[in-house]
Length: 582
Image (tube, rainbow, N blue to C red; front, side, top):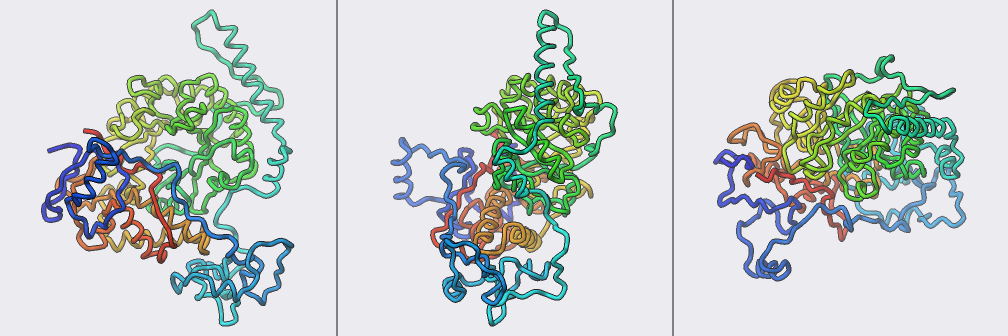
C-alpha cells in the first residue's frame, strides 16, 4: 500500500480514481463534485496543452497575490446616522457625507434579506447594523424603526477585547506615545551585548551580557513564577488568515486550552493601523490568549510589547521566527531571524524585560534549510535570554509542510533546556498521533496544533477523551452555522460583514474538505499528509463537504449566507493540499 494515500472503504469509492501527485492543492472551479466526470473533454484538454506547453500541467499555487476581493460600492451605503431608522435622534455631522441619506431610496436598492432571524438581535437584544442588517426583517418594524428587545442591556460588558483605542492611535500616528523607558531598555541591551562581545572576542567561553539597568525592568524570570502555565496544555497554533476570532471560539468550545491571535507585523502596529490591530482582538471565552508578533527590529518589537502591556488584555506575547513567507524572510524577519542571532538576542532580551511579568515566548522551526538544523542550539540560548517558553515546529523553512515533522529532533531541543517549557508542533491529527509524539518526545511540555485543528477542530475533544468522534454531516454543518453566526457578530451582519464572513468561511473550507469521516477509512487513522482516494459520503451533504472544488465551497456558503454577489469569485489564499511527496 502506498503510504502517501489515505485508503477508503470500497463501498464509498468513486470508480476509476487515480492518484495525481502533481496536483499541488489549489482546486479547480470547473465542475461540481456531484457531477464530476473522470475524463476531460478532448478539446478542453488540447487547449490546456497549448497554454502550458509540451502537454505539461500548469503549476498552480495558493493565491496570495492579485486575489479577487469583493468590494462594495460605498456610495450605495446608508449613512450611519440612519441605521436605526428615519425617526431616531441621530443627525449626520458631516457636511460632505457621501453616503445615502434617504431611507426609502436605500431600502429600495438594498439586496433581499438572507434570513428572517438575526443572530445578534436574538442573542444581544439589539442589532447595531439596524436597517443595513441582512436579517433586518426580524428587528425592523413597518415604520422602519430598529427595534430593541426587553432584555437588551446597553451597559452590558463587552465580549470582545483589545484592538486599538482612539487616543492611543492618535498618539502613535503623531509619534507622541511615550516609549522612553522601552528605548532605554533596548539601548542598554544592545550596548551591553556589544561591550561583552568585544571583551570576549579573543575567548571561547560563554558570554553573560545581561544588562544592569538603573530604574528599568530587569529580567529575573528564574526567580519569579510564570504567569501562564504552558505545561500539559493543548495549544491552538497562530494561523494566518484562518486563525481568526470566530474560528478560535469554535476551537475553545472543542477543548483548546490556549489560543493565540494571527501573526501581526510590528511596523503597522506601531503606526496604529486598524487592520493590523484587529489581529489582536480577543473573545471573552479565550481564557489564556496571546498575541504573535513578527518583525526585524528589537526597538519596534519592544515598543509594540509596551503598547500591548499597557493597553490590551494579553496573557503572553509570542515572537514568530519560523514564518516561511518569502517577503517576510527577505525583510530579515520570520525564519530569517534564525540566521541573525545577535539581533534575535536583542529582541528576546528587550521584549522579555519590557513585558516584565507577561511571558514572552518564541515559535521557531528546525532551521532555514532541511540539511542544517539549528534550533537545538538556539533554544537553550533563548532560555538564557529570557524566553518563558519556546515552540519548535519540526520542519525547516525549506520544507514548509511537504515533509513529516521531526519529533525526534523536537525531543533533542526539549532535552537541552533547563527550566522553560518546550512546546512541540507538527503533524498531530488524531489522539493516536498525540500519544505517539508524546512518547517520542517525553521532555516536551505541551503540543501545539495547527492544520489538524483547521481540518477537524474537534481534535482537542478527541485528545482529551482519547477516542474518535465521527460527526455526521448535519453536525458538521451546524458547526459551520455557528462559525457564521460568530463571524456576523464579529465582522457585522450588513453586506460587508456577510461577505467578509463568507470569505473567511471559504478560506477555512479549503482545509475542512480534507477531513475523511473515520468510519469511511479502510485503514484508520487518517494521516495529515495522506491524499485520500476519491470517495462519496454517506449522504449528499457529506459528499459536498468532501469536495476540493471551490464552486462547491461557494454552494456551502450560500446555504448559510445566501447567494453570492454578482461577479463573485474566490481563490484560496493557502496551499491547503500540502501532502507528503512519498
